[in-house]
Length: 267
Image (cartoon, rainbow, N blue to C red; front, top):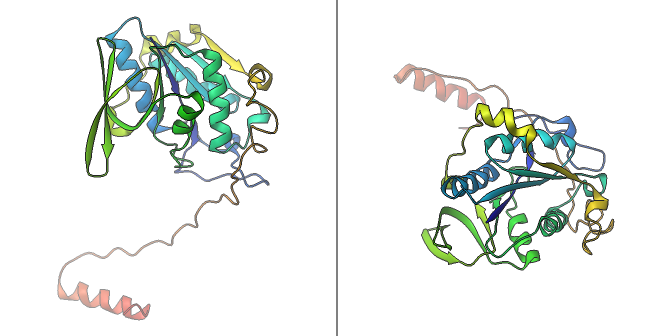
């Protein structure tokens, strides 16, 4: 059994957003982190591996060369293989172009009858929750989104899906695609032995030519050119002014608050 986990390196949203002239984010100039929901998907895959030594966990990501650091962390956590799809042709992709590229990579890795493809629910830089379902559609596989629990025993996969007002328990036929949310688990830390051994594990970089045998991978269908939706503008929100802290719960404090609000014509 093989579990392919799609992971993404995203901008640290607590920092400043760097923007290129074309309106897309300059990821190379920004501090980055591993997308949180993707780490929950990876942890779920590693837990299945812990329960069955025949499970192999493969991580795949699309991004610039520095994405290697995140993939090495995934290997140090326990993943067995890593693939990075990286080329200028893939830059500026929206969810449609991204899912097309990742689907081509997954097809090249190969999906067998017992395999599972896992993704995080959504990435914190776009918050669209579209890539996972799009991959499922393009692979022609059944999908379950918002997964909060996974049970795999005797060749049967059962998952629990979060709804707005409760949960749904679903039996799923493999191969399939699951998108995971943070309530599923708590991602593990890298181990010392994992860190020492991560550079000995298989790590492969695929450029545009490596995937060009897929009919969906052409210059017009990937990256910014192949994106039906494009970002008009990216920017950091203006910094709010420093607030005024008031202490006390007596009449004097209330009078002071009323006076301040009156000066600002709020009341």
